[in-house]
Length: 158
Image (cartoon, rainbow, N blue to C red; front, side, top):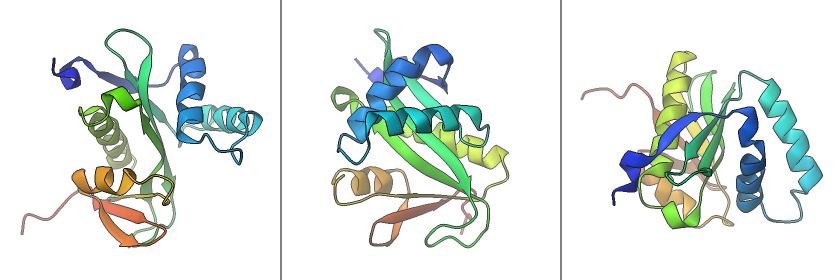
């Protein structure tokens, strides 16, 4: 089955919060990200229209991925002062490599374009060894270590 065609991406809704927390805990399982802190961040993000969360709906119910995006004034390797930024991005392990992450990133990039951004950026750490490859497969170029990425939202045709 081609899972990609059965995945729906949408903005997060209040009934998704328990699953959103599950995904955030999977992304940031270390003690540095305590449950109370993750929940407090979720409240802040949910109240901020400039930090949307996109979720992937699993074909069998529940969520199977999430992407938190924001707009930053600066990011490594970027030349503008309004940059879409992939803040947190997670797909359940059983659906990785099946296009779910791509659909989440495409939704975030579309939102950033609508906000007037011409660049996207992201970062990762060595704690996430699959992240550089996932970013590269979506057109992001590494610009510096602590690994930062950027992508033109309107690439030139030349």
